[in-house]
Length: 60
Image 1 (cartoon, rainbow, N blue to C red):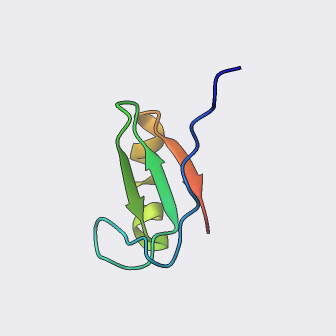
Image 2: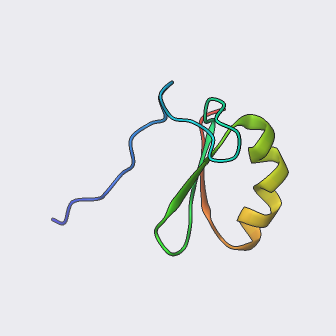
């Protein structure tokens, strides 16, 4: 049975890629890359991320 790759849960060490605040949302892009966002920036960019079909892993 093939192993499923999972990403670790966000911790206090994970920071928003926009402002450096504590990350609350991981966006896994269709290309395989990921972005981390604080709650404020997650709300700001959520619609665009959904439009590009990013997988959103919410820790809020």
